[in-house]
Image (cartoon, helix red, strand yellow):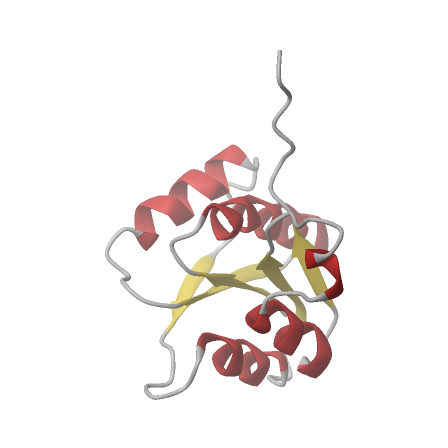
Length: 128
């Protein structure tokens, strides 16, 4: 079984990585990272997320995206794989009006995925 996490170089997705590792550790499974864009720094981010989440024993792999498909399409396609039990995506905080309309990737994945989806918001910044 596997926990799949979408990753593009955004703050939201950097927050989703450790969450995916914590879930995988709790479920006794591995993590598959679906990368959108440049893959050069992903291995370091995966190691940091694994360590930060206390999931040092959790295996991780990077899935190659299908060329010519959108990141949302690649994530939805992965959700149909028989060994995928959870899909994790990062989402940004929105204003009340913005909450009516999710980003197109988030909305597409939440509506079309074949497995449960967890949408991870970034932590709230507290002003002092």
